[in-house]
Structure formats: structure tokens, C-alpha cells
Image (tube, rainbow, N blue to C red; front, side, top):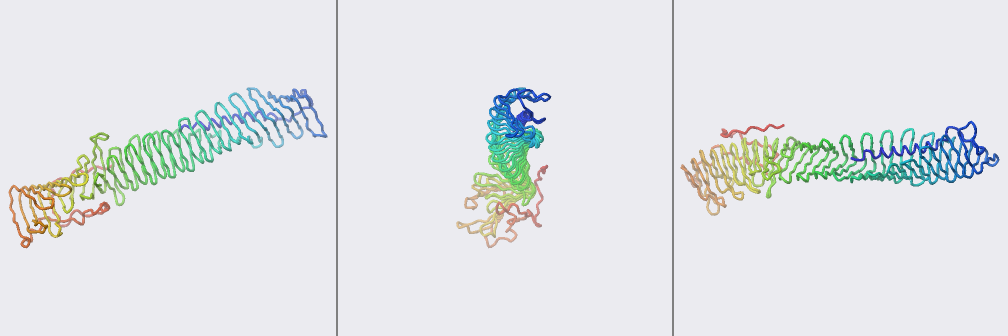
Length: 612
């Protein structure tokens, strides 16, 4: 902020001006005025140099001496000229009328039409066309009073104008306490300097503490284009502390700030806002809103609490949560309390109770129901839930940029065309490959795949390929829900077109159960085959188109003569109850194996990621 010297300079100037006025008017305070004739009163330091007429009528005006016509007198280096003057030694008062002109050494002058000093009331009154001048400073007002008991000087009765060193203060009324150093301005106060313009109904300050308080609908404009709107603002020029209360705004070429309470310190760089805060960073094209927002322009640290939202238009991402932090120097951010991070440019999102992110990585964990990752595509959205979800970017801000998303423990994923559960998941956006470990299960349509590890390659809206490594088992549920096409092998590669299975390659201890159908899809035969290598082609109508095997042993049976032990292959298990039904069902915990599950892993698990 650039306001830090404004009020201090203004109030210091006003203080000097008021003190000057008080020095001029206080010359009568030490002793009463005496004047009996236009000669020196011996033994006194008060001199009447000239008066066209000097008289005293005790009957007409008791104890009052009247001087008229070109009155001129001196006191301790001060001279005063006026058209007429009244002196009352007994009641300790003095009045001057007409064109009153006072001078003192140093070039200080006072002009007015009436002046009154009241010794008993300890008051000095100056009235009409009041002008006080000294080199570089001047004050114009209609009326000026000084109370010697309370040490308060007050000008009023019309617009008063204080000018000093090219700065101007205009107000209907102003007062200053020479003892406490408190100053107040009232009535359409306008403060103009080469760098600032302030409009406020009311201003209060203290020249000793440097504290200034503006009240009412106030506007502060700077030469740098900053505009402050507030109804209640306090500023300390010594500590650079500013506080704006009530709904206030600060707009500038770099940023806009809005809130019910705004606090800023330009010396430390600390800024904070409370109550529906909105900060618009015009340089970085970032918007922060929240109940309470804190920011330090030197360290780059910002944090928000209570319904916080950060919109980054450059990086095209939005973060919301109960509590958020971000550092623009380190590009690190954290979130807590239902945090939602969405990257519109990279087309992914995270949601969880805890989030830590940089420009190239993110991790989400904790909370109830737990963290979620979303990967957007043209046709569908992939939803992934796990106990911990993290993301890492590679070759950021280049055409080769891609991301890897990791799910650790109790992983469940849902997309319209594919669903999966596993213990550990890696999704790579470079080739849209989803790799699953630790008892993975994948469903696509009416087909279930299990294995030691599975790789599924996705298009924008459908699954493209699935590779199963170790203990591969494919189960296709037929329309009658009672019979199943099955393939068991060490490894398997399934090819899909428009989401439908078109080809299956299997090798290593291959076992196959396949049901033949007629034209209306009625089951007409059962095929059991054992081979080492299998290649099966399937028509769009889900019928066996052709099959190739290196060497096979098999039996074809009519539907009425299927051996009971050949209805399912060994280790056959359906996990329909485990399958995620929709994007909200990914939070449900379900076991990926039963007491009947027998699976000696042929593929080792990957090393677990270390999560800070």
C-alpha cells in the first residue's frame, strides 16, 4: 500500500498550523491589556503605537477603553492593526474590529474581521474571513476558537481550507487539542496531495501516535490508481497498520480486495480480510474468496478459512475447502475440510478431507467417505476412491506433459463402461492406461476379469484393451444369468471395440468354457477346451466368430448333457456384490476375495509409495 505517509504528513502540517495560530492569539494570556493613551505604558511590555481616537467613558462602558481609527499596538514582537479595539482590564477581555491584521516575526500573519479574547472564560474567538499565513502554509476559515482550559482549537461556520507544501485539507469544521494532540475534521472533508485525494464525511487522528480514523462513506484515491472505499477506516502512519471495518474495498492495478474487515501492514507485507472476503489478483489472474483470508505479499504465503475458494484462471484450476493455503513462491498448497481440486486444463480433479499439491503433484487422503480422484474425458468421467490418492505430473507446461494418478489401499473406480477394485492403482494419462495390483477385479459390461495385475487401456468413452498378468480369469455372464463363458490362463489380452469384446488372446495353461448359440441367442451347446495358446474372435452379436488354438483337448456337449463339474472352471468366483454400481458406490468397502479364493500370486506387487 502507498498510503502510509499520507495522514501523518497531513496531521503534522495541521498541528503546526494550529500551534502557529495559538501562538499568535495567546500573546494576551500572560497579563491584561492596558491602554490609556497612544503612548507607551511604562513598566509594561504592551505598547499602543497609534490610534486616531482613544477614549474611556466609565458611565457609558465601565472599565472599557476604546481605540478607533488606524489602531496599532505591539506585544513581544507581535504587531496588530485594526479599525477599532476595546480593552477591559478588569474583566480581562479584548476585542478588535474591522480589517484586523496581525504579524509576528518569521512572516506569520493573521487577517480577520473580528477578534475577541476572554480571559475569564479562557477563550479566544476569531471571526469572518479568517486567513492565517506563514511561509509554505495557510489556513482560511470563517470562524476560529481556542479554549485555553481544554487546549482545543476549533474552526467552523463554513468551509475551512488548510494548505501546506502543496497539500490541501478542506472541511466544514475542524478541531485540535494541543495537549493530547487529537485532531478532528467534520463535514465533507477533502484531503488533496500530489499523490492522494481523500473524501470523507469525518476524520479523526492523533499526531503523536500517527493514528487516523475516517468515518462515513469515504474514498481514498492515489496517483498509482489505488482506490479505497470504506465507511470506517483506521490507519497508523508510524506502524503502517491499516484497518477497514464495515464492507470495504481496495482496488488497484495489481489487485482488488473486498471484505467486511480488511487489515493491511505495508511494512511487514501482512494482509488479512474477514467476512465474505474476495481478493482478485490481477497480475496472476487468481481470485480468492472465503470467510477469513490471510496474505503476505513478501513471502507469497496466503491462507483462507471458512468456505474458501481459489480460482486460478491462468492454470485453469479451482480449489474449494474449509481451510486452504498456497505459496506463490514455492507453488505449494494445502487444503483441509472437504477439499475439492479441479484442473480444467488437465481434466482431472481431487476431493478429500486433506490435500497437498504443487503445480506438478498432489496427494489427497483422510475424511469420510474419503478421497476421490476424477479423470475427465470427452465422453465420460473416471471416478477413483482410495484411502490415499496422489498425482504426479511429468514434462509440465510442454506438449509432452502427462500425469500419473496413484490409489493406495481399498481402491474402487467407476466409469460408465468400466469398473474396478484393487489394492493399488496407477492411472497414466499419457496412454490412458489403468494398472491395478493386489487382487484386482475389472468389470466391463457383463464381463469380469481377475488376475494378479491388470492393465486396462481406455479411450475417451470406452475400454480399448485389457491385459491380465498371472492367474487370469475372464467370466462373461450370459443373458439367462445362469451360464457363463469362462477363460482361465496365466496371461490374457482382451480387445474391445466400442466397449464390446471382439478378441481374446490367452496363453499358459488355458482352460475355456464357451456356450454356442443359435440365431435367436438360444444356448445350444457347451464347449470345454484345454490348450496352451488361444485366440478367440467374437462377433458384434457376442457370438463366437472363429477360434484358433495351438493344440487342444476339448469336449462339446449338448445343453442337456453338460457334466456338472464342467459348468465352471476351477477357482470360479463372481464378485457382483463387490462391483461399484455408480460414482457414489465407490466409497463402499467390500472384500476382493472370499474364504474360497485360492490364488498363488505369479506377479509381484510393486513397491509401495512413501507418502509424506
